Length: 62
Image (cartoon, rainbow, N blue to C red):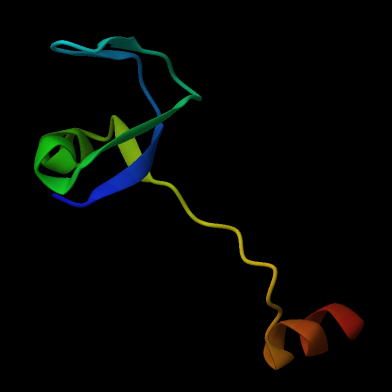
């Protein structure tokens, strides 16, 4: 199964992995993260991109 990275918002315990502290990053499948997302305990980690779009450049330049 494909895994994704999630940012931990609230401390919680994963059976077999132990306690996950707020502010850390955890990697799990979408099936594992489904209920944690609904409860607001994790959020999908936003990948930072080095590419800058033309629109973003125009906004930063003025």
